[in-house]
Length: 445
Ligand code: PEP
Ligand code: CO
Image 1 (cartoon, protein in one colour):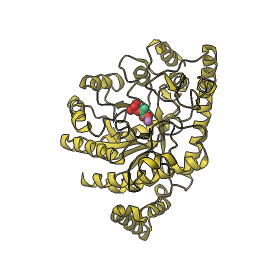
Image 2 (spheres, rainbow, N blue to C red):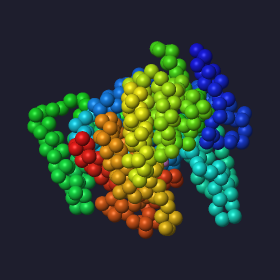
Image 3 (spheres, rainbow, N blue to C red):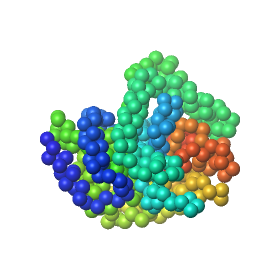
Image 4 (cartoon, rainbow, N blue to C red):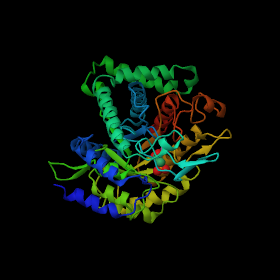
């Protein structure tokens, strides 16, 4: 039963970027053995179902909403915070469903997003240099040697925290919390706030649609519950490999750490371990594409990751930056279209738009985020291809990390409510605004 898994380990000899240097390899082996014994977090049937949903999105019959923290933390895996994130995604999804007149596939960057690629191995503050924070699955954020020392046992804690997060997500989305009518009531709270007056007319239209359904007596299961999938960056191979299991029904390997896994801009080298690993699992997979991606890169990625051009298998997550998307994306989309491939194209309007504010915060402008989304739609519209979804970093809480939006968050406000340990996230209200604006764009398509 372990042939393919041994295969995965065999390929451990390929170079892998962005892996932590563990202090003790015996301990890593113990943790891997322990992880391999844990129950799967997600099941092959769910993963296959997601693939069919993503195939619908790639064909223009559904729209993917993927969102959550840049880096989840153990400390923030509380019921309140998880609920707020799920709630925000559900609220956005209602608005997008109306705008797109299509089902919205809901997917959290949740229950596994505990490891981060970093631009440098070290971080220096004043006179002190310590290993960089690589996510709670690897080391701690506090700036002292003990906390910053990589600890493989944290991967087991990441597994357990993912399990309890996922348990709550399943309860929220299957147990009545996700009822369309209550999600709509929460949205009224947003659109009736005078600062959001711009969104009032679309909100009223949705309101009428819901009242119409109620008047017709519509009351079915899909109003009360919803499918919700989880995803994260498959970065830490010492975590993802032992979580990969052979499905007894089909004999295929699934990475059971999440329904959807992606590789980032820094780990998508064609001959390296991450691409090889993703090529071997049956999950639907994603690859981030930044502005330096060449046509040859995307063609080779398709060859390696989706040679059979299977609907729903491969998602390209474009993260070009607002100033580059109109210039850099068309050639890639065109080349892929001309190959006859139909991966799902989605936009990540966050990672190409980072700035550092004068007072020293990593931030992003809401207007740049929206501009990249619009550029992404324009590119697909002009090529006759399908803009199939969005990938955003967000939180359900009232933080101040991204600038702008109708609350007009400015640099001084960042000093009051900046919580992210990694990249700046849209807060609850900015996330809903984004959904309203994207819904308006989708209506024009
Ligand atoms: C991320 O999604 O948090 C990330 C690091 O993105 P990218 O690989 O696109 O830089
Ligand atoms: Co990020």
